Structure formats: structure tokens, C-alpha cells
Image (cartoon, rainbow, N blue to C red; front, top):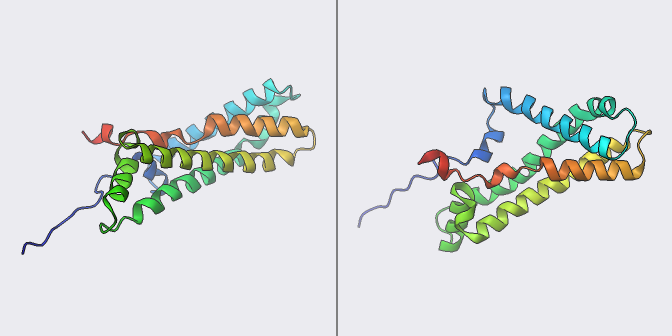
Length: 169
């Protein structure tokens, strides 16, 4: 009887880069900070916040950290599912993991799980940003809620949906 040899995920999905400290963080962190600052500024302007640019810069570093933490939560969910695949799981589970890591659009349940991870991250972004912005006594509750909402919508980790298959083919 021949023994089967398997190699598991030598190439990993793009969203895994958040877990690996590398030179890419030199671009990732400033880029994320810039996007968070821009979205915060535009959301505050839209909500009629006085001195919105000053307020956006005042809170942007905390919002950026909250965004990274929230992205870790969603990526952690996906990673936990992938690590649970020990090769002895049913074919459905193996296909789910393959879809999450290789191409979320190839298997509908993988797409749903990936979207769930994005939504969980977005909820974390919303609640953390709402908490951060609520510390500012010059913002009304509505301005805080709406700004946090726009941050959650525009800065959610949609990159989780990027098919890694495009990079490795």
C-alpha cells in the first residue's frame, strides 16, 4: 500500500500578509493610515463637523489602529477555519477551505464565509471607531455614529475576497 503525501498551502492567500511582519508593512501601514484619514475627513465633512480636517487628523492614528485590529479579527476567523482542516474532514470542508484560500468566488459557501469575515471586521471597525470618536466632546452622537458607519463601510477588508489564484497562475 502506497502512502499518500500532501503539501498544504505552500502558497497562502493575500489576506495572510497581515499576519506576517515584512517590508510590505512599510507600504501597508501608511496606505491604510492615508485611507482612514481621507475617509474620516470626508465623512466628517459630510456630517457637518466644524474643523473636520483637524478632527480627522486628531483621531486618524487611533482609527487606523482600530482598523488593523478589526482586520485581524476577520483574518483570524478565516485562519481558524483554514487551520481546522486536518485533511480528515469531509470533502465539503476541504472545498470550503480551498475556496477561502484560493478563490472565494469558486465555491459559494466559501464566498459566504469570507463575506461573513468582512462583515465581522466591519462591525468591529464600527464599534471601535464609534468608541474612539465618542471621546470627542465636540461631536454629536449622530455625527459619531454616522462617521463610524462610513468608516466601517469604506474601510472594511474587502481584500479578503481577492482570489489568490490570480497571483499564482
